[in-house]
Image 1: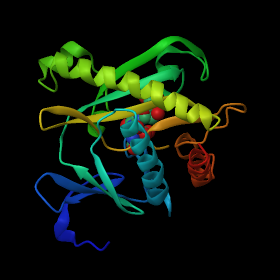
Image 2: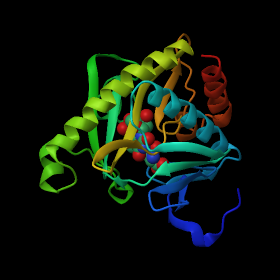
Image 3: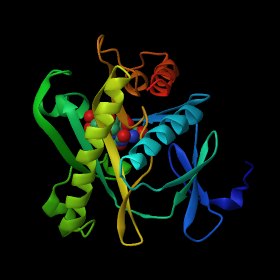
Image 4: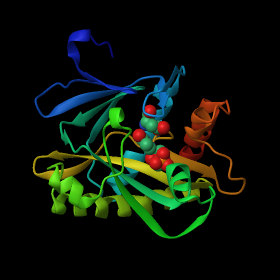
Length: 237
Ligand code: TMP
Ligand code: ASP
C-alpha cells in the first residue's frame, strides 16, 4: 500500500501510526529500525519490519483464537496492519519466566537461572527516563491506570504468558521474558503494540541460543537470522 506523509499521526522508534479508513481504526506500519537501550543504539536492518510484522500477526491471531482481545483488526500488507484505535496506557507489563536482562543485573542472578514463580513487573513507558520500574501505588498516584485496570492487565498478561509459552515450546523455543502494552478502547482493556523478537527474549530450548533482539543489544551479529528462525519455526506449529 502507498502512504503519504500527511497520514502520519505518530512516529515511534520502530513503528509509524497512520490515520485509518475510519474514526475507530489506525494503520500500524513496522519500520526496519532496530533500537536498544532506550534508543541510544540505533540501526536500520533491512527486512526487520517485515519479519516482526509476520511474527506479531501470527502471535496476535493465535491469541485472538484463544480468547484474548487485541487491537488487531487485520493485516494490510507485509509491513502494516489495521488496528483498533486505543488510548495507550503508559505502563508496560513485563513477564519473566527465567532470569535475564535487567532482572539479572538488578538482583545479581546469572542469566538462565530458573525462577520459583513467574515474575510480573510494571514500568513507566518513557524512554527519556529509561522506562523505570514503577509499582501499583506509584501508578495510581500518577493517575496512569486504576487498580482495576492494573489487575485486568496483569491477569491478561499471565494468561498470554501461558498461551505463548505453550506456542513457543511447540516451536522448540523457551519464552524467557517479554513486554506487553495495553490500551483503552470502547470501555475495554485491549492488548496493543506488537509481540516479536524485539519485545521478547526467545532462546532455543535445547542450546539456549538467543534468537531475539539480545543479538542486536550484544552486537553478536546475524540479528535477522534469529528473527527468520523464529518465524520459520512458528510457521510449523
Ligand atoms: P529487560 O530485561 O531489559 O527489563 O527486558 C525485559 C523484556 O522486555 C525483554 O524481553 C525485552 C522487553 N523490553 C521491551 O520490549 N522494551 C523495552 O523498552 C524494555 C526495557 C524491555
Ligand atoms: N525498547 C528499548 C529501545 O528500543 C529498550 C531495549 O529494548 O533495549 O531502546
